[in-house]
Each structure stands twice: as C-alpha cells, then as structure tokens.
Length: 444
Image (cartoon, rainbow, N blue to C red; front, side):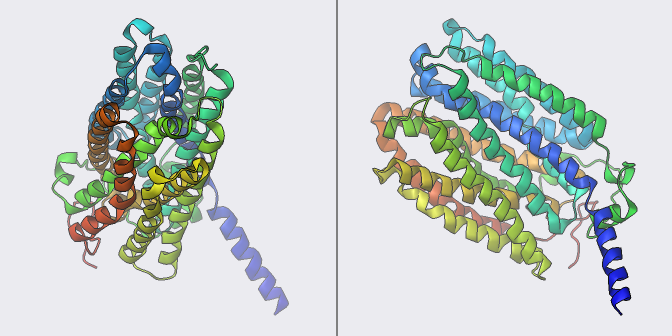
C-alpha cells in the first residue's frame, strides 16, 4: 500500500512539474513589458511639479498634454488592437513596444521654447505605441492559460503597472535635481529596457500549440476549458454590436480614476501636503504596493471561487462588487488633513481598482473568442480613455479657476463610480453569455 501511494505521489508530482512550466515564462515577459510601459508613462506625472516651474505651465497646459496622450491612446486602441489580432501576438506586441520606446526617448529632445507642443507630440506617439500593451497581454493570457487561471495571470501582469509606477519616482528622485537638472535621463533609460525586451520576445514567443518547449500535458491543461479556434479573422466592426463588448467597455470607464491617480496624484500631494520630487517616493511606494496586492488578490479570488464550483458569472461579479466596496473610502481623501491617511486611502482605492482591472480584462476572454480578444480590449479601453480625457479637461480647468476645491468632487466621483458602473455591466450582460468563434451565443 505504501509503495502504491509513493508511486501515485511521484506520478502526480512529475505530471505537475511537466504542466507547470513554460506558460509562466511567457507571463514573466508580460510582467516585464507592463513594468516598462508604466515606468515610461509615469515619469511625466512624477516630474510635472518640477517641469511646471521650469517651463511655466498652467494646470490647463498640463491637462492638454495629458489629453494629447489619451487621444492618441484611444486611436491606437482601435488601430493596434485590431492589428494585433491580424498580425498575431508576436509581431503585434513587438511593433507596439518598438513605437512607444522611440517616442519615449524623444521626450528628452523637447526644448523650453516649445515645451507644451513638444511634450504633447511626444506623449501622443508614446501613447499610440503603449495602446498595444494590454490588448496584446490579454490576448497572450487567453492563448496561454485556461479560463480558471486567467484572472490570476492577468492580476500578476496587471500588478506590474504598480511596479512601473513605483520605479518612476525612485528613479526620478535619484537622478533628477529639484531644479530640473537631468530631467531627460529617465526618458532615455526606458529605450534601452525596451530594446532588450523586444529581442527576448521575438526569440521566445510562439503560440503554445506551436512551441517546442510546451509539453503535451501542459498544452492539454491550457486548452482544458476552451476549444481550438479556426484562423478566420474577426474585425472590430463585427464585435462592436455585441453586448459582451459593451459590458467590458462600460466597465473600462473606471480607467479615468486610474489615470487620475497616475497623472495627477503627484500634483495632488504637492498641492495638499507640499510633497516634492525628493520626498514623493515613499508615498508612491505605499500607494502602489497596495495596488499590487489588490491586483494579485483580485485575480486570485475570482479564480479560486471558480475552482470551488462557482459559475464564471457569479465569481467575476461578486469579486467586482467586493472591489467596488473596497474603493468607497477614497471619497474622503480630499477632506482629510493627514498626508499619510490620504496616501493610504488612495492606495486602498488603487488596490481596489487593480483588483477590478484584473477581473474586467478576463470578461473579454470569458465571453469572446481568443481571436477577437485584442480588438475588444482595444474598443473598451478606448471608451475608458475618452472618459479620462473628459475628466482631465474638467479637472484642469476647475483647478485653475477654483483651486484645490476641485479635488473634493474628483475623489467623491472616484470612490462611488465603480458601484454605478457594476450595475450597468450587470444590466448589459446579466448572465455573462459567451460567444463562439463565429460570434454566436454558446448555449449554457
């Protein structure tokens, strides 16, 4: 009996060793790319209070620069999201990161005489390239992970957004002087990192069914709860009429809150608590470490509920409800006089948002075929960016006209938006009906 149990354990252990292998290396590349992505896009938000003094920007000038980023990001989501579905993940992802690395480095060439237009153009190019990161990453997860593991895998690479956001103030604070000296260098660092990543990606990536380092057992596990799809392309126009697309798009309206933390967080702390470029590192570490924990926990929670027998619909939506409740206290940030309480509440809101994000991205691969994933992520993310553009313009103008009172309404909306959005998501797709490779509803 003891011998049989030993053999059984070794067989099971060896099978697990075979299965748990190459897909995690692919996920590691997604984590690296997303870290670079958010390090690159966070630099300007961290350095803004210093550049504002150097270049004489108004809040509205900065809002316009942020809007140029978001307009290009929205356009890129449609263009590059669809392009990734057509070119495939390998070529599409490499093209995306190549574009954003070039424009990221071009920030360093901007001169004071045309600083607003120069930064607006550089940010637009950066955004167009960066728009491909999440469509490509979500598509990669759909190709390499079964449904029950996708939220957790998404939570892990989504957590890298916070790693990038943490690195930005640390690197900027270390390299850039309070008078702005060396402000160009952080923008150049990302170019080198991106070049290394593109080389590794092109050398490493293939679909799991074509990859020589994927065992039969691992491939069977990856495909255990989804079918192999045909190669017929699906345009974003075809998925545009589907309620599954719009449920995700409505959920992405909450991105406006994340953009506020990312691009205006340093300014809020500077305005409310006199935090500067040299002491912003610790507050940002606290906020984004909490965000990392939220991303991983949110992905783990819904996947664990599914493994316990919960339906995909119930597991995802209960997790989203928990996220929305966790975020509510951020509404009180603008009325507290404690810097560290404000930092903690923003961090709690960021944690809830990242947990929310890990689950709404999986709504796409839960309900739509893999070959349409990047296109739908692009469409939904474009809607989120448009929300961010409207919020940026309103906040920039209100700050210039009425000062810090604008933050009260901003944080109130940031805290309550998620519950409202979740209600609309449920109304649009109450049963989370899934579509097959031909975009027909799969009967439950």
